[in-house]
Image (cartoon, rainbow, N blue to C red; front, side, top):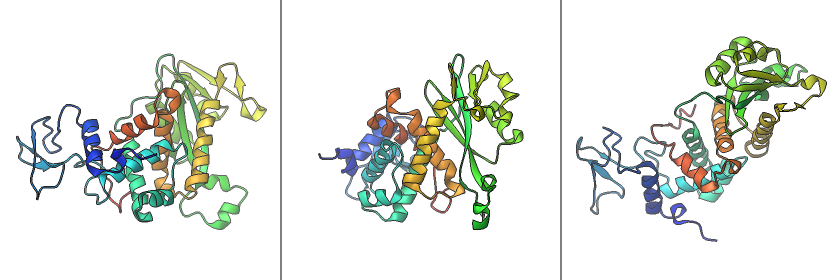
Length: 304
């Protein structure tokens, strides 16, 4: 089956982006004026170039986005976004390189730029009145600079990266790469990012005991006693998220340095929060990621 034109034709991809990012007409990235620009024509003018009438500055749909100044054709950016957002556990840079016909180095950087587009611009509190938020932490990978001897130690868990995730049963997920499980580390994140009107569900970990009193209710399951559900009280939803995350990181990406972990978390959060079960198909998920490219830049030597 032939690919849609937005994946094979650069002009079609540009028109698709313009429709997504400029539903009310061209938006000047320099002065912010909407629908006050002239499309420039002529043989010496590159396609998709506009000139803002109020500020007289030229721009295109990629100016001020993660695609700006890229030599990769725009249709390949749109196709790569589709591939990364439609693969439940992600797609490796080697696979992107093969499918797009670009170098591994280019594919790696493209993937990181697209992950940047998946990162929300604004963070509103997770949950809300009547909503159930499951909260749990897991360990993944080793911290930077850990020796092989330390990794073999029976207490090697202390050298692993800690990931904290909040999942609402009604929809989305939000994850943080944290320094550890001390109260001083976790409590500020929990208080700042989870709505106090939520019904909190956690395991028996001591760091959740007191902060749980600040929410509408706090249900706990005791994993040490092999208890995984007691009526509506369970953390199985967030455990399911961790299962997808770890399968993707170990099976697809395999190697992830500590400084890039937060970007991979944004990727898995995004796909989980815009999944089929919530009525978001592959095309809509890709469009949502493309709508997030504005107002962000990511230079090759600063992808962190």
